[in-house]
Each structure stands twice: as structure tokens, then as C-alpha cells.
Image (cartoon, rainbow, N blue to C red; front, side):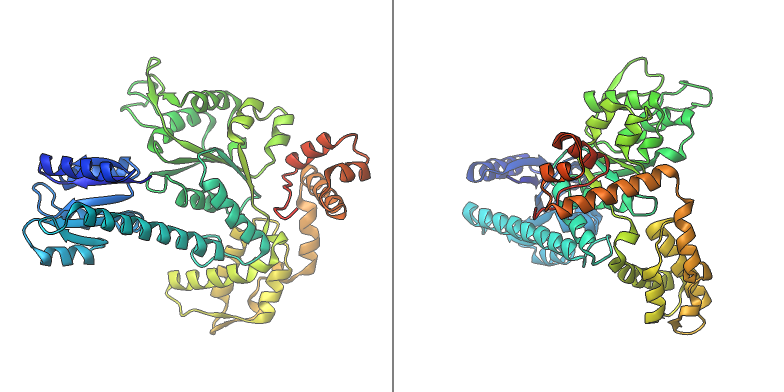
Length: 457
């Protein structure tokens, strides 16, 4: 079922259209009396199609189309109509992005229903095409052709389609916010706000006021009432990046917000504000381990961890280094106004052999910028690759910079993955091979180490 918005300044006309469309189809119909009212509705409601009168006071149909940005027109079909035979206006509306037009004095109800259904079908096909382009990587912010990246794109589409909370895990620089934005893009909240908050960047005494907002006079310096990030994201998606850095006292209040779907601004005297926010959380640390160490609330973990999306580090997907490097070269050259440089195959080979353990994709992006500045000609040569990337000794010693916990986590994960593959992902046989007391303990270890069974197993 789709939601259709009928916009006409004449009450009898818009209500008749709404009644007839609702009677002939299973679609939900809402109405607006002018373009401005319709634009306001589009920011609040998930509208699939607009049936729009071109001749209206206040904001007419053409003005409304001009104010609808390109992204909105990509996601919403618009059918315009006229009662005055003004087809020049209709043609202009098509150029502004409308799907079709009709003269309401010449088109009967059955013909209008066919136009509506055709527009909705075209919208569905365009959405499917966008998803296919995302899966193929041609229209995705996730650059790369490795099997891990392709699997990640598929997982994003799956979790985007459901309203549940999601935890995104990955090392620093792997692109957790990029994944969160892709989830937002393919969710039913794509027209609503996406707000990202870096919990690690907020001083502890400001976390609560940033998230939940505050009333005027709530504390020294609160000179006016201010909405928090939850209110800013209302109707849309809120990303809590580096959630493991959130103080335990704020975690308790976050849990209540997620349970009750409402917030209290600081200094509000207990007055609640209802919310409709989907929460995504991101962390560069395993949250189960943080929970076991008493740094993360268990009840909050199970509230936010409905789905887990793990982003593999760049060293586990060397096939992505080439496409990412080319992407960064093109983007950086455009930013600096340089002609696009080419990459020597030997330079690419050096980049692919490096372990990228300091900051993953973000580190690669910085290295690409340094290479572009060093290369005077049209080609980035091996000698333009920074010495610390070319040196094999750097690649060996970089592993020793890791903490004991990081090394332990990687070793456990490697051993468990190898055992699972050797036993064709048979849980009981793997537990027996590793001398683990029962398969439920193995499943707990898999969750802690963020190991998921492949779809074909």
C-alpha cells in the first residue's frame, strides 16, 4: 500500500479525488490545500505520490515543484493537472520533474487510476534499480569490489528494510558512518533527518544536554531552550558513533529513552517529549567485551544490538585498495583543481601489500593526498609512495603497536574461523575439535568475536 497526497485549493475537489482514489485502490490518501502545506507534509510524512493542481493561491503547483529538491523528486512521483487547458504549464512541470499530467475535464476516474498505478510502478522499478546499482557498487558510497564489500552491501539492504536498531562494528577509519548513511538511504526514513553524534568527542558533562536538549535556565549558560540530537533526528535516524565511550550514567538514560520512546530535556521538570527515532550505534571495540568488563550496560547492549553489521578492516580486503585509491585520486585531484593523475601498477602493488592497521580507509585517503602532492607529472610512481608505506619493516613493527587485548581478539578470531571452515561450519563438530564443552559456548564466542555464518552454509 502506498500513500498519495492530493493537493488542491478547492476543498470539494481534493476531497472528491481523495474519496475516489481511496475507493478504487488500497492506497492511503492525505490532502493539502496549497503548495506550502504540501511541502510541510512532505517533510513529516512518507509520501509515495503527489497528485498536484497547478493553479492554486499561496504556493502553486509549479512553485512547489521548484521548491522540491532533486532527491525528493527522485523518491516521490508527481502527477500534475490543470482545469484550464494550460498545457504550457504542464510541459514546464514535466521539465521540473513531474512524472505525468492530465486535464481534469478530459480524464475520467479509471484513466486517472491507471496513471497513478503506472507512476507507482515506475517508482518501484526505479527503487529496485537503485538497489541493484548499490549492490553492484556503481551507485554506492561503499567503494570496492571484494567479496567482503559485496556481502556488506547486501547486508545493508537487509537491515535497512526493517525498523530495528543496528550496531555497526569496525576499526577506526573503516567507514562506520558511511555504512550508517547507506542504511538511512535505503530505509523508509530516507526522506527524514540523519543525525550523527560522536560520543567520544563530547565532554562527559555535555553528553546529556547534547543528546536530550535543555530548557532555558537549566544550568549556567543555558540562555535559551535548545533541542538535543534526539529531537533533531525525530522521524529519522540517529547514529551514536563510538557509543562505547558513553558514560554509564548517560547509558542508563539512553536505555530509558529507547524503552519509552520519549525524552526529558534538562530542566524540563519531568515534561516528556514523544519521539520516533531509529537508533544506529557504532563502535571500534567489541561491545560484548566492554559489557563483560563492566564498561557497557548489558540491558542497553541487548536493546540496541538487534542486528550487527561488521565492517572488515582494509587489510582483510586488499582487492578494495585499487578501487579506493582510484576514487581518492579522482576526488583529491578535483578538490585541488589538478588534472587527474594515473597510478603506476607498481605503486598500486605497494599499497596493496601494506597492512593499513593505523587508520584503515582514512589512512589510505591521507596517503593518496600525499602521493598526489609529491607527483609532479601525470603518473604517481612507486617513489611517490611514502617511505613508511614502502618499508617492509614498518609493516612488521606496526603489529606490535597493538594492545594485548587487540592481539588476543585477533588470534582468537583467526583460530575460530579456521576451525569453523575446516569443519564446514558445523557448530557441534567445531566445538568438539576445539575441546569446547558445548556448542552454546561456541555460539557465545562467535557472537563476541563478531563471526557470522556465511549465507551459503
